[in-house]
Amino acid sequence: MSEAEAGSGRVAGGASRPVGLGALSAEQRAVRDARERRIVHLGLGAFHRSHQAWFTQHVAEGSGGSGSSSGSASGSAPWGIVAFTGRRPDQADLLSRQDAVYTLLTRAADGATAELVDAIVEAHDGADAPRWRAALADPQTAVVTLTVTEAAYHRAPDGRIDLDDPDVAADAELLRRGAPEACTTAPGRLVDGLRARRDRGSGPVAVVCCDNLTDNGRMTRDMVLSLADEVDAGLGAWILREVSFVASMVDRITPATTDGDRADALALTGLDDPAVVVAEPFAEWVLSGRFPAGRPAWETAGARFVDDLEPYEQRKLWLLNAGHSLLAYLGLHLGHQTVDEAVGDPRCVEPLEQLWDEAAAELPLPADEIAAARAALGERFGNPRIRHRLQQIASDGSVKLPIRVVDPLRRRLARADGARAGAGGVAGSGIGPGAATLLAAWWLHVTGDPSLVADPRSGDFSADLGARDILRLVAPDLAGDDRLVTAVEEARARILRLSPADPATSSPSA
Ligand code: CS2
Image (cartoon, rainbow, N blue to C red; front, side, top):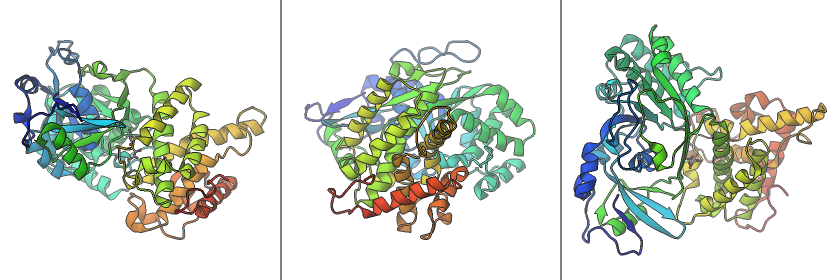
């Protein structure tokens, strides 16, 4: 779309004018008008706009999408997204005021470019239940994408939906009664919308999870089915028959937008856009699963479709996301504000490399692929123009850490047990200093200033939590392991010996 490069002089328009349909060229306007409303999204936030909307925008001209379940071709018309907010209705208002057209500011280490994205054709409040139900029930709708955050799935330890959660319980009650009001949880909204689709007889659809969770397609299916079973006797069977839950690994670093970003976008495009989104140049989307009613040709925009998502998912979660969490908690403790600052501090880099060594040993990928991913991450984290705030990443650790660090740690411990039993594998206790440092840094975070802690389990945090209490929160099955408790205590003591003022102090592993 209209692209402007810093310093290129190709600035669209001199005086500032509002972004919106009027900002599109005649050609762009024709594409936008032709977009078929075939994708519904839940969780309209910055990440959706820098990632799935951007991939949809960049589907090659003329390739449209694949056909419907009946096999009839949908033609080459581009697909459009009807997007609903999860918890930020203000974002729907903001985007609607500018026809849902917005600027994506891409910040590379050596400069920025701006482009207009118009793949979202409508933006609505997710609490608008009639509209939500109508969108899911529309026979044209073929794909439902989700970015609702890790915490929003409300998974109980038994792998089913957490019916003890008051929000889930309230939604279950609304759904049982067939009440007209909107559900507030993501699984509640999905069950509500899918029931409307069944009742209208609109046929199959694919639900694509785009949150950073392990086996996220199956997990979404389990949450939806376990809630559907609670509220409507026949619905689960219909969902099993008609709904395909697609798993996906999503990646694009998307920091919260600042006033500076909005000013830079204005300078590049001449368009005044209060809804600018900022992202790094890198973008990756790997998907696995069936699309029974067709899908956009996302592969023409760089997405990949694979049979086995697990290695991609583990690479992303255990290297990028775990690395982010380590930098967030340790970096904040050491007085840093952003990822690029933290990754410039050797006291953060040493445990980061240890954490990556430990994860790499569990990854089912060739060594050169892992080395390339680590090198790329070093560059991406160090991008000085992406001011990704550590505080943004630090949220919801109780939900993120089990996926990012406890899963690979558990595998490593099992291999160490195997080695002791003579079956080969990792030597020693299996507890790596990287994982112990991350758990200890989170411990310091959740027992520190409560005003800086955002987490669904914050009611369980208090200043006097010990290492075992911390493990009970994120790795209950490992809380009885005395060696792990000791390793986390020792890592905490090492972090506390580091002086925030003096990067030359010995590293956490020393
Ligand atoms: C980050 C992710 O906030 C976080 O927890 O680790 O949002 C991360 O930036 C994305 O997954 C990158 O693709």
